[in-house]
Image 1 (tube, helix red, strand yellow):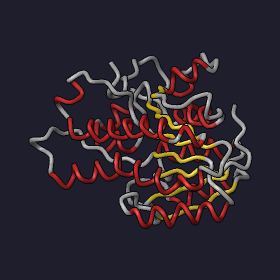
Image 2: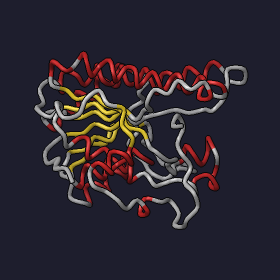
Image 3: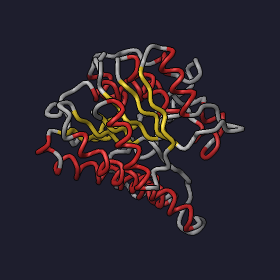
Image 4: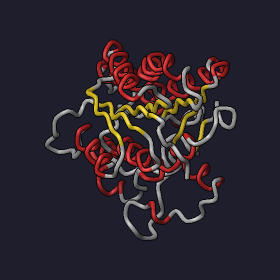
Length: 275
C-alpha cells in the first residue's frame, strides 16, 4: 500500500460515503486530511459530518482539518484551500469527490436541478482545481483526482439521463485537459470510476433504494484505488480514466469479495457508463 506520510489531501464531499472512505484510507497511510463539505451539522437521515470524520481520523492517530464548504461558492473554495495549505504547510492532492445526481431526461428535469448538477460536478472540478493549483505547484508529489467516468459515447447513456451524463463527462473532459495543461508543473491529473455500483446514500435515496445497494460494493474499494493512485509519481500515471477494480487487479489484488456491501453470490450491478 502507498505511503502518504506527511502528504496533505484535500477532499470535497468528504463527510460520507466514498469521500469518508477515501479520507480514512489516506489517513491510515499517514496523510493529513482536509474534509471539506457542507455537513457541519448532523442530518436527520444521513450519518456523518465533517467533524465526525475528523474525529475518526484523529482517533486513528491521523491529522484532520474539517472545513465547511459548498463547492458552488468559488470564494469559499479559495478560502478553504488557502486555510488548509497554511494549516498543513502545503497541499499535495485534491480529490474532487463532491457530486450531485438526478437520473432524469431533459423533459422532466427542472432547470434548477440541472444547474445544481453542473455546479457541483463539472464546475466544481474547474473551481477547486484552479484554487489548489498554486499549492500543487509547490508539491513534489502533486495529484488531482476526480471521481468521474470514462467517456463512453454510446447513446444509451444520454437517452434517459443526458443532463447528469453531460455534467459527469464534463468532469472527465476537464481532467483530460488539465493533465496536458499541468504536465509542465509535474501535476498528475486522473479520473476514477467504480466498475460496480457503490452502496452510498446517493444510491439509497436518489437512484434505486436498499435493494439496489445489495448489488453493489462498499466504498472501500474506491478508497483503496485512490490511495494506489496517490502513491504514484506524476510521470507514472496522468491523463488516465481509471476503473477501480482494473487498477487494483493491476496492483495484484485478486480477491474482491470483501468489498461486497452484502455477502453472497448475487450478481453485482455494473456502474453507469460502463458497457
